[in-house]
Each structure stands twice: as C-alpha cells, then as structure tokens.
Image 1 (cartoon, helix red, strand yellow):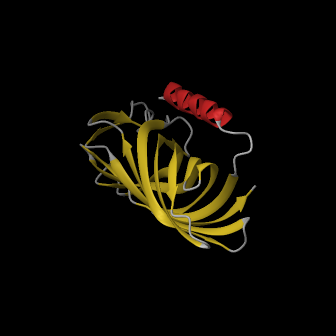
Image 2: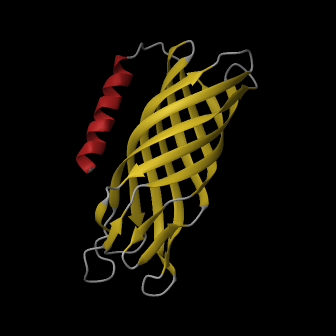
Length: 203
C-alpha cells in the first residue's frame, strides 16, 4: 500500500508539472468535524470516535469551471471496542487521508456551488508504540459552496463522504493484542463523513 501512495504522489506531481505555469492556484486550510467508521471482528465491534479534523487542499485551475486538487486531512481520535476484551477505549488513533482528484465549479459572481471526486489512500496510525499502521485505498465525493469575499479570498463550506476499502477479511493493527498479529476483521470497508469549513486563498 505504501508503494501505491508513492505512485499516486508521483503521478500527481507529473500532472501538476504538466499544467500551464500561469495556472491559477488556490490554497485552502480547513477545519472540520469527522464521524463514522468502524470494523466488525470476531471478538466484537471497533468504532472510531467522532472528532475534529484539520487539513489542506491545494487546487490548480485547469479550465474556467474545473480544478485538479490535492487533499490532506488528519483526525486525532480514539478507537473504541464493544465486546473485545474489555469495552471502552483501546488506543488513540490518527486517521489520515491523502487524496487527488477533480473539482467542478459553477462559476457565478460570488457564491459558487462545487462538486468534487477524489481517490487516494487512508492511513490509520495507532498512537501506541508497537502497533502497525493500517493502509487502504479510498475514494471520496464532496459537495458545497465557495463564497468569494474578494477575487483572492473565499470561504469554502463542504460536506465530504470518504469510503475506505480494507478488504472483506484479514487482520489489522498487528501488535494488538500484544504478541498477536492484529484483529481479524470482516466486512471492513467503512465510511466517514466530514463537514468542513476553510479559507481559500487564490494566487
């Protein structure tokens, strides 16, 4: 999976380098609230706690109503268990998304509806030493608005659905419980919803 992420980044860089040098660039730092996500295991259910997330979107305008985008998002949260050993928090967990895709924009004067599609990688990184990260392919769809205060500054409000494909069976988080190679999961694809707000700076 790590090689897949590297290839994704490589082709993304090639795409950007191939774009016109004079292309309009937008940079959007954002804060959001992300919820959903979990796994079923033979010992019980795992649930990712809802929590805030932070991220950055970098966009290159390729046509009057279209942009290509890179997105990075990180949520610091907790993995909870129901029926596994003892119910409650298992360990701290960082949920990260690295995505590449396109954004369609209805270009009106100030308030512009937007619709986006992205693909990339999901990384689940435990906050406890000795437990391996889990990687997965993921895809996202989003919708929202950008409201331009000036020609160079806009508010971006967006809702995003992120579906991660961890496979129909297998093990994740090798090293938990201690001395074992992870938790056996089934039906392990999961969906998270992200509601976010950001400031878009145009260069």
